[in-house]
Amino acid sequence: MSVKAQQYAAEVLRREQITPHLVRLVLGGPGLAGFESTGIPDEWVGLIVPGQFQSRYYTVRSWQDGELTLDVVVHDVGLVTEWATRLDPVGQTVTITEPKGSYAAPDGAQWLLLVGDLTAMPAMARIAETTTLPTRIWAETPDDLPGYLPDTAEVTWSTPPSETSSDLAAAVEKIEWPAGDGYFWMAGESSQMRAIRKHLMRERKLDSHAYDVMGYWRGGGQKRQPRAVDPGPVWREGKAQGLTDEQIWQRYDEQQEQQ
Image 1: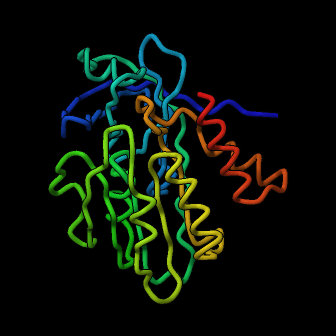
Image 2: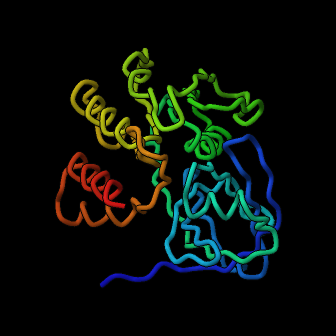
């Protein structure tokens, strides 16, 4: 029996254009009184904007003093893009679903590698701010983001081939991996994530607990589309059915493609 996710009504308190492709929305109000963070640094929430019924999922950049901050990548088209960029959303009420997260560095990890494009920046920033592990980041973004990532991390910057594609898979294949056990976290374009999961499982032969790789959007020459499938239920259902990690992520990618 499925249980509907808890929902919260939130008021848009502020909107800030961080870069041409990144908009910060700060949400608050009495409707978030019962909201509780999972404490997982890559946690995400579903966002339903006025006049729509379908959720789009976004990483929580921060939850502090009753204010929920989401840094939203704006696309050519999309439910949230049109609302956040073409209208003034301040003062409007949106619906937020309860947060879920997947980041889980194992005990004994000696290092942390984070790889992602612009959609992964909020999660990578929050992870890097909260971890005590030596951290390296590979960030692929179309815009300059000085100060967005903490100085404690070693960062390698690159630009994507186009606004609807990514080259992160090639970057990962060139990484010189640190010695010892660690944790690898990556998020971005779905086809790139599929390639990297295969690389980690077949070439690097990493244990499933040593990495987390998630498709946030799909490209391949299509118009850029944000994440429309919550990976949490897909993962839990797959585990309950005894599927392998590769089978679960394949199912998640297939559901992304169907949106």
